[in-house]
Image 1: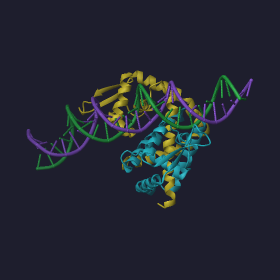
Image 2 (image 1 turned 45 degrees about the vertical axis):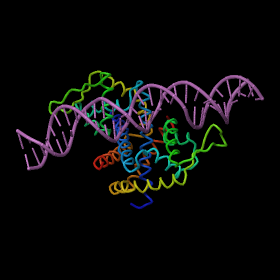
Image 3 (image 1 turned 60 degrees about the horizontal axis):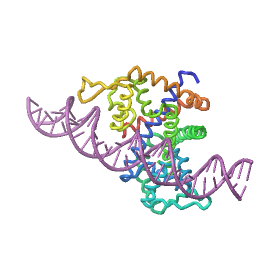
Image 4 (image 1 turned 90 degrees about the horizontal axis):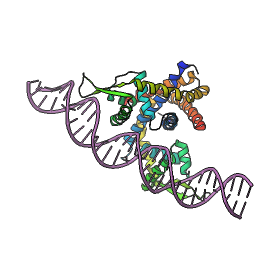
Length: 147
Length: 147
DNA sequence: ACTATATAGTGCGATATCGTATTAAATTGG
DNA sequence: CCAATTTAATACGATATCGCACTATATAGT
């Protein structure tokens, strides 16, 4: 890598950090008090990607420390949005299932967030964002593998 | 926005969140114990963008709540990496200056982080990353303006 | 000039984050 | 098989994050 392109890679992660703040703030402005972006993300993952994941699988999916996942799942369970059942295949572990209430909440959250995303979509059309997501995903997969 | 492209925009912010975790973890693995990625980011900003910023300007630059900035600046000041002087133009405010020790630390941090970034650069060449950064920056500026 | 309003920074308290250590269960290897 | 090692989840404690409220100063409106 030529030295003069090093700053570009710092800028990349700087932009990612700022956008993370901006998007978390945007999400949490639309979610009820006390519900965090990470709570929504877990519910969304259970519904869209796969229900019945273990806490460790969720930690890996979001690159979150597993103790943070325990904390988040505690919230979701207390609100009745998930159920945690012991995993018969591995009795050290558990499986996380979204409840009907969790699904309803998640659908409502999607609806609440849609206007903000639609506003973004007006100025950042899907094909442009798709290219962006593709690049980000490739980088994420690479960094995940090297972590 | 057609309904079927909505998930793309959720994925965008999901990828950003995961990459933020991954990059923060990567940075902090190379920084001394107790030094966070945000500490490095502030020092870097003072050196690369502009020295003598006010705390509020820094908060805006990183989209960080100003109380968080106060906290971060406290750390940097206790380590002797910045100095905060009162601002003669506006006596409510202060200006943050990086010290020679701060510069030295920042340069060392850059050196410590370079191998990781160079590894990324091997598989993600500068032109590809430049395109990514361009898209991210445009989105960041847009969201910043609408916040 | 004078009052009302807005803004910069920070103390404080509530909560989130996350590293370390612990427990229980699974796996490995001899 | 059994002992040694690894792994899943979590309790616990230290620290970071961040909203609210407060103080000091600046700005605006009359």
